[in-house]
Amino acid sequence: MSKNTKYLLVSLPASISRTNDHDEALTALRSAVTTDYGTVFPFSIPEFKIGTLDALVQQADELAKLETGCEGVVGKEITSIDNQVKDKYNSYNQVKTNLTALQRRQT
Image (cartoon, rainbow, N blue to C red; front, top):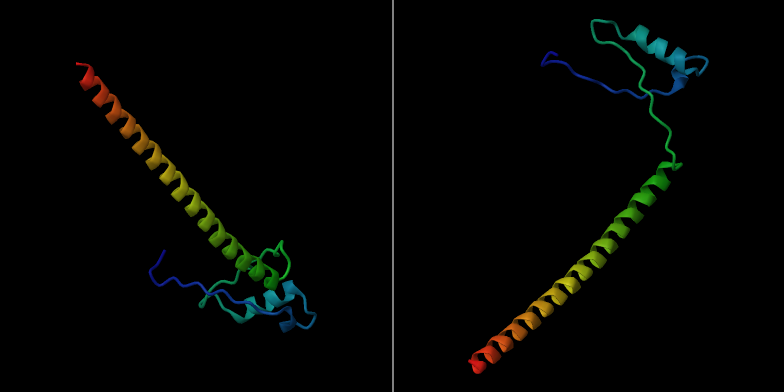
């Protein structure tokens, strides 16, 4: 592939043709662009399963809010678990120290 290769994505309404037909509009574009300047290929854009773009943007905003909320909850749980582990470790060390002191007294 050449370093000078460039791609251009063009979105045109079907109304550039007399019949408003997609294929006729693509043919009209192909006749206007010679092979010296490039090759025209159709590029299908899938339909949104969600519906409109506004609905997609709204759901993206809601997802961002949910992500922030989840991060907060997970952060609190991690802090809580960390504190519990530290408490158990401190209790273990205290019992171990007491046991060592009792064993010294017995000898």
